[in-house]
Image (cartoon, rainbow, N blue to C red; front, side, top):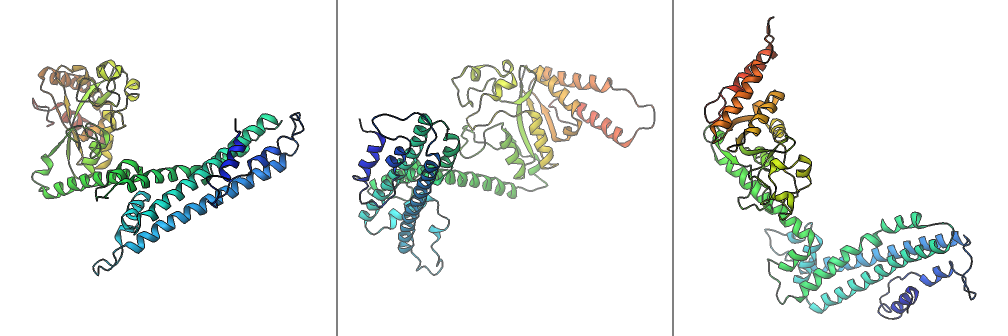
Length: 433
């Protein structure tokens, strides 16, 4: 069986013979741990300082060589991009495509503009050589530390491995690997289109940027919609149903329905009113939820908790069940606090589902306990008259149970009294009077 040292030397004399890339002196470092005299020496710390010096020097040399090789590759890529750019346009004398280009976009431009595809293939082969040498060097440095710790008294893993894992030699390999995969796919295409699918599929930075741009377009659309509506006419009556969300539960363009971001985005873009649905958990926490369970919106829609009713889940269990957007269902009080912080015009229309009298009672307690948040509620509604009566009874009972003020009433007490009257005065649809 070929040991790792033999593997390094085979690659040095084989695949990377003419690559002009650094490979660590693995066997020399190994010889500092063992002195071959027909047997392995007893464990000791002889040569520790010499080993440390050789190891750190190998890391520095490998990292410097890896950095230089990657820099040379990217300089070749951008040299082709710049040389192949169309800068004859008088209206746009600067090559806009290159401006701030992400690595994935740069590789796409390179393949589009390189005059000879064999040149691109040579670049791909060079990337593979650089990746191979970095992989061998980092693995060799890790293995030799492990071997030292196994055969010596003192342990060096805690000292040397952090240096290795924090180095660009170790962290930069992933980017080179991704670039190799992307360039390979780009070259395999007979014709590169403007809507380049392999780029979207393989380059995470490009996908992220594309997602950001799509979301930004949605935000700009909402802002333009708000600007087109008369401020003193229709806008105060326009309602964002379950916040600003996609009606087909897609979260790649807009936030998920009944999520905190769905309401914050609507309010910050100028919408005044947002509608929400509430449910109560087993431990009496009011959360935003439209359905009786979260199977439709749960990331793990086949899990047991996603099929259970919200009323059968504790808030802790709800938090441990992320939705498809990665967030959790928000507490009603969190949404109200966001409304209060964003604008005095930001308000909620709270719907209580029929038969959910427990939620009505909990909502009453919340509004009584937090009078500063009542101004953020524009309306409480339900298609169940019994539920609305339950809400009214709870609020009325709270007001009547408060001690009367015999002395002169301060302005703050008057304001509190007025707020109570506002909460308890509404029509059959739950509109505050």
